[in-house]
View 1 (spheres, helix red, strand yellow):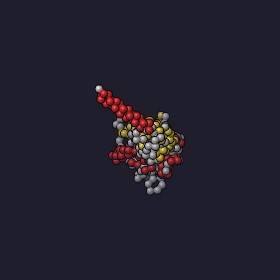
View 2 (cartoon, protein in one colour; view 1 turned 120 degrees about the horizontal axis):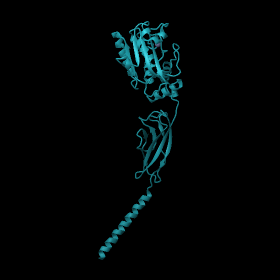
View 3 (cartoon, protein in one colour; view 1 turned 90 degrees about the vertical axis):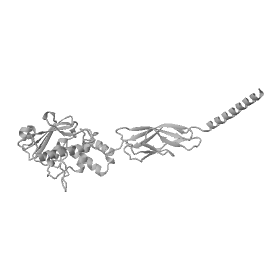
View 4 (cartoon, helix red, strand yellow; view 1 turned 120 degrees about the vertical axis):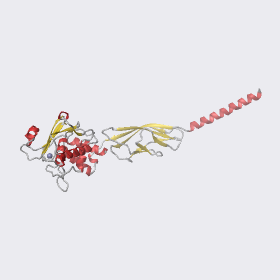
Length: 333
Ligand SMILES: [Zn+2]
């Protein structure tokens, strides 16, 4: 009996001393300290831009390791807590003016978390563009607001919000038929980032646009409303449209020659583009008021059409709204 009691006491004593030493260790380590923090960065800054340093401390002086678990597009230097912009991060004030994520800090024993807010500040997007991009904005305004002196200017731009379904009245010569299909395919390629398309349809009843090939005199019976406008003009093609709000609902296109250039030009009008002012030099635009069969859409005009029919480009914008919306879309490219 005596022996067993001694053994039990000894075990208790061991257990006691073990408990108290563990408690001492716990008291020595305290969790790292980090509180909610706010940072600020301008929209559209490039990847790699430094946002700031996370403030955290540890009363034991342990080395701290930083991490972000809630947003893989914000980067953190795991040894010093420096925040920076990751590759995939799009900062657009007009879409969201703040971004929230959680930073964790680990002292080798315990993790502490804090909510971080990144406030995104607005910039003047146009000022952030380079000269080539600013030229694109200027030419976009020129074409979509009909700023060329050869036609009356518009205060707002107008475009199609629905697909264009084009019906050919009568027959096209084989050469023009091929050109029309190629020109439509090219416009569809340029507008591919949005929902707008041009397609040829077999019946007039399902169409939203009509194309007629013939002489000016013949338009009198086919498009009488167009003929009224052109009877005293010297023109080889023409396009008129009707719109509701600032969206085109219908168009009528007439061409009197088989050149792809003329159909490209008149289809450009039907889509909402005015005349180009890029008409000098070796490669004048097909949207100039006077063209030859070798004229084509210029690269800058392909870009104008791409942004004009971009899914995020609204219709009905005035000159200052165009500058803001287009500059933003260019920076988001
Ligand atoms: Zn024209």
